[in-house]
Length: 397
Image (cartoon, rainbow, N blue to C red; front, side, top):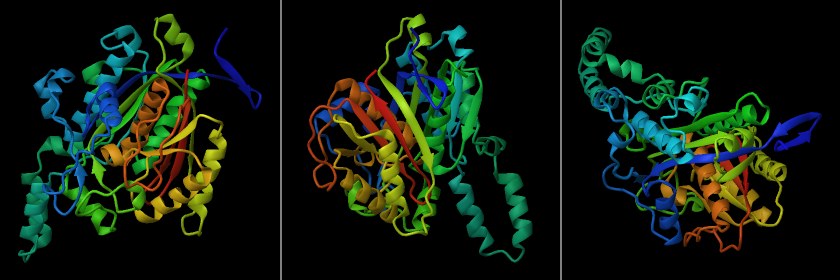
């Protein structure tokens, strides 16, 4: 019998998570992350390289393992290399790497930022402009002479999907979403919905973020979002400690997975994307409560939050989660905040949690993280640092 449920007059299939690729400051792969969590390891942070900002730097990885051609690596910006690497890990995890027949029918949905700047060139041009009597002419000359052609291409958000297609042979349909944290929520929502509705059999969904960038740290600090000085737990709302990470999931219909002999890590049971009117007092808290209600809070439920650390958004989410009484863990307390990649990373950790049947230990000092018993279902919450709210539900398959 097919794995389907009926709701609102239509048949909806189950959606399995059959592969996970995760790389962050704690390592690469699920085993490395679980070992770090179970051991209660302190988060890996750096508050000197980009002082006074706190970042979670990417663990040292050999990109050659997933991107063997040096030419491919050279034409990618760091965030694209991170994402392409994590996508390869997910394909390996699902057992479909280098399977041309399956990969040619694998749909891809990517959450991406706006590309990366050449910070040194930007800084040099700005310095020269401050002393120029003909700023417009100088700017045009420097843009023509200083910017390498590949930088303009690297700015294209859909280049991550393009590189995954080239390097790993994923050549089904492709979609790219932009928009900070909400892009990750919507990428997962679309990938899930297509498989549940029977429009797709297998999909690759994910994103990547390079936190080690002066330009984005400056951009976020201009709005007073950054964590500075020493690392502090996310739900104390100290600011955003951005984290370099890549996170990808292979989603699959049970029929397709069974036909190739694959077993699920977990089941993705729903993804919801919302947007509260943040100018209205209490709107975000109410929206998070409604998302928790949609996911359901049956016994054995825990929350893995993509909380950012940004004060207003974090305080509003904390109010709703505290009222729920559910045990909570924050992704940012372990690997930092990855903006577009954060929700996918949280889903990956939720799948890992339900596959283990237990929640990893709490981080000392975080007011929402408490000890918890067995876990069979996890609600993933995502409240954007300045807009957008979302949730997902991961259960045992």
